[in-house]
Length: 169
Image 1 (cartoon, helix red, strand yellow):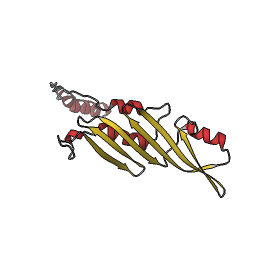
Image 2 (cartoon, rainbow, N blue to C red; image 1 turned 180 degrees about the horizontal axis):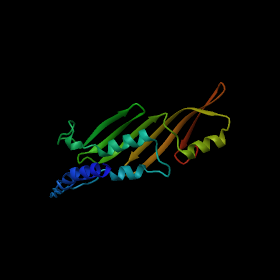
Image 3 (cartoon, one colour; image 1 turned 135 degrees about the vertical axis):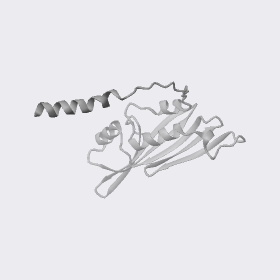
Image 4 (cartoon, one colour; image 1 turned 45 degrees about the horizontal axis):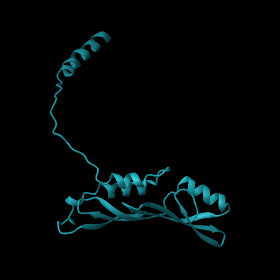
C-alpha cells in the first residue's frame, strides 16, 4: 500500500516538474553613475557612524536634483533641507546636482568608541547626558567632525568638544 501511494505521488508530481520553461530575455543597458561619491567617501571614518547619520547622508548623496520640484535652469546652486527626528542636513548642490557643501547636525546619536574612551579616560565619574554631532563638508576644504557633549556628575554639568578621533578641542 505504501509503495502504491508513493508511486502515485511521484507520477502526479512528475509532469509539474517538466512543465516549467526557462526563458531568457535581453535586458536594456543601464548606466549607473555616482554624482556624489566624493561626498560619501570624504565622510567615511575609521569607526562607522550611527545608523540614522549614515541613512540621512546616503539620502543626501542619492538626491536627484534634476528630477525634483525645486529644479530650474536659471539657478547656479540650490539649498535643500533633509530632516529626520534625530538630525538634519542642509545641503548645497550646484546646477549639475553635485554636492558643494553641507552642514549636518544630529542629536543624541551613538558616540564612536574613540570618543567614548576619551571621555571616560579624562572624566571617569561623569556620565554623558546629551550629545550633538556636527559635520561640515566642503568640496575643496574637506570635512570636519565635532562632538559637543554634556557631562553630568551629580549636580554638576560640564560641556566638552571632541573631534571624531577623541581629541579634545
